[in-house]
Image (tube, rainbow over all chains, first blue to last red):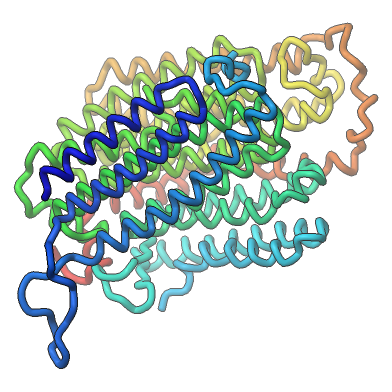
Length: 115
Length: 502
């Protein structure tokens, strides 16, 4: 499972960077979305994947018996997803407003603040 | 329960919520802004007092002991940073009484300001690496919204660059946390430090260290990832620019100080060497960028970059004296840089522009404002007896003691070029006569003395702080020295959090 996830994560990072290097601001935001998903999958993979062992403690016991899946990475990913959702919805509104004001989606034409 | 650790986070959150309740009343929001920031300053001073008194102050959120729950930790560096946050909050709250336009206030200027302060204070106080990420995002989302208040073209362009680079840095930070968790299986910074020193030092540790360096380097605007800062900081409302200039990049610097003294201190010959050259190039490119600019706030923005280099130099040399210098430099820089931005706002209010070529004659009309400018400007350049002199002196002395000749030489040259930049502003804005085609000073109705008073109060207060640090540096130096001692001895931090000797 890990090699497949590693390849998927790598492809996501690569396509995210590729999209961010394009000139269109819409593609830039798509790149940011892919990037946050890639980071989430990276946490999921690198924290170790355990199949079919939910982190449940049997009735009456004080600790689980045997190996269980680590629930913490999923809590982290959930938090990261929520944060990414909020930030990216801001980014989408921003590029919409920017397009209305600047009348272009080409990053090369947004050089007013550079000189 | 140690309430003082949580209060600097809770107070701005509470006042942010109260300002939201008073959404329709601008007056209420202004009053809450003042009360909230003063309360934050008082709480932060309380925190600094108890840290000076008892060492590390630790609070376990929800009663979950470390390393399982989220821990708030205040050592001296965090406490100093929180006090500075409180001071800047008060200065900006007073300044905003006159500088914030009603349309900005209507779109949530004050609630966002409180949220930003909560994010900044949270980043300084948390002892959990993932929680640090969350506070970073709280701070970022508030700063995004503040930056585009007003919705002008330049703001949109600046915001796109600011948002993109900061989200990229967050993604790198998050990936680094993921890899680090995979390696040590814990998120508590003290616990990470213990586990990491026990695991075999492989190449992966260096990879993660460099990922943290890049992520925080983007936030701190260090070379070569600083270009978003001069493209965006001068576009927002001036009080917002001043707050960003003082605090936001310093959160990145603080995170670098924390992570590279506590967690990644095993191979300084690699990580700190990398930081050293990053610091040198940050200083140099920042100051050279400023030399080419003719817009008041853009010059100051480039100087933020070059000053970040000095702070990183303090961390990178990694000797006791250099860390003292780094901490001292942060204290001096936050006050001075915010003050310079506030003064640029007053000049803009008087003459209606930030372009140096169209400005002039301020010394003739307002000699006192000119003196108020000279205090932070000469302090930034490092002239004695102002605060910047001692900050630079400590770092350069540490550089000579560490025999890092090239970097020390660069630091000295950059000091000289900073002076050149400040003199350029002085000559263009204050000294030369007003260009003839410019409309007269008093045609602007908003330059009545009563509305200017709120702009002058914070500038005078911050100028007095600069003079105080310069003329009475000993107690400040002692605090910086004590905090450097704590930074160089991470065992104290670990023991305070985990309650055991590693």
